[in-house]
Length: 109
Image 1 (spheres, one colour):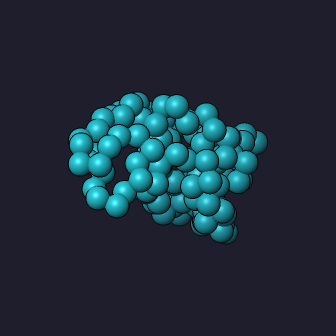
Image 2 (tube, rainbow, N blue to C red):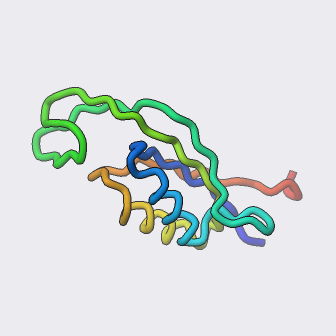
Image 3 (cartoon, rainbow, N blue to C red):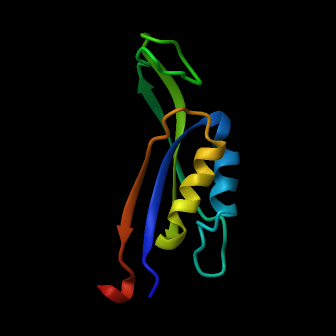
């Protein structure tokens, strides 16, 4: 049985569609006979770029707030590295914030 993970990534609103397409294009977001499945929640990302950073948004030493979406999708664990690589390729941030959670199936309960 394939292991499944949930990948969560935080994306500025300007890049959400391209990131969702990259996720689906890399094979994540398949649920049954549906592809490119994801779930999103709006939020605010906050950070302060430090010396040596190259921020896509903001300036060194100044606090920044950005309208972002939390995008969640499922992926076969074997495809997860390729999905993350696809996210990094189109994501505008120098440091991409994401989480990976192992999932169990209903049959494993």
